[in-house]
Image (tube, rainbow, N blue to C red; front, side):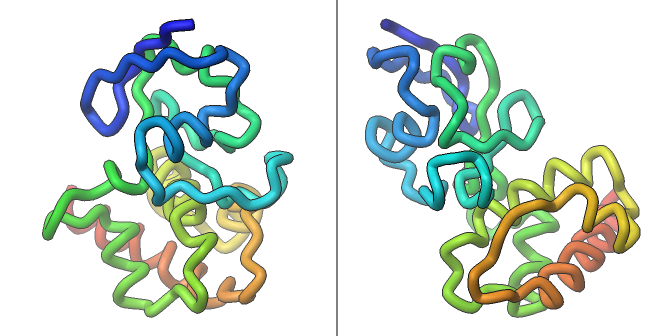
Length: 155
């Protein structure tokens, strides 16, 4: 089945089974390796990317549902030296330990900040449901608040 969507600002047409998870199309067909496989059950969030601005767990999102939509992966969040505020905050707060889950956390955070520009700790707890086996949650919370500061100062 031919499916056309925009990914990181570029139109792409793929010819795959429409039930294929978007994660595998992104990683294996389009060769964008930043989005990670974690659990395959939409529980951990390592595979989080954006579809029309919404955080989506791509391991359980059939690619057919991406038809005509805008998909953003971690590779499209910021470009070169023009980092997204979330990426900048992650660097400033030295968030990653192993780093495997971090693209999913950053994508979930970027989507949340679009809806809640000044999140409280409760907002973070209620909206960022990803899992980090290294338990860098304290640094992530600091980075989320820092990303909000950066975003608000750029507005």
